[in-house]
Length: 188
Image (cartoon, rainbow, N blue to C red; front, side, top):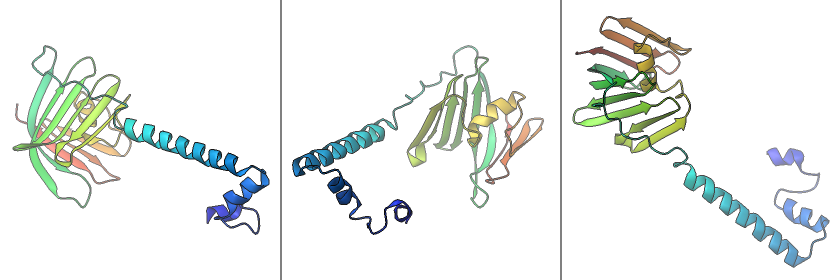
């Protein structure tokens, strides 16, 4: 549909490339070389982007929470991924450091459901039950609830569209747009 608007009148989509090459008055061998080069470029481009897509940001090293400087808190939480999703109850662990590093794990015994961590300039989240890993450089996306929690517990403000309700050792974080919510309390 889109090409019909930009193609010259009387030229169908199927004949566009053929007509273009005839207008350039290229010999048949040059046409074959042209198409071979275009195909090779396309294959290399797709190969490079497809293979490197998962490895642009290397996995963060495992957080050693026994090192000095970590503040570790544990508790119980109920997580709802979206408004119409069922709630999942489990245990959580949140650890943070003064240098901006943070580690969050939500477990439904005996399986870790979500493990997330961030440093001053990168972040990563793993969902082992779905065999998924996401990572990036800079600050984590606002939509990742697990990486918002450490900053909020340290006294930060919630991102736009999120509500944060701390009440002593009990707290609730909710995204009004998606319905995702995380509610919990500390056992320590």
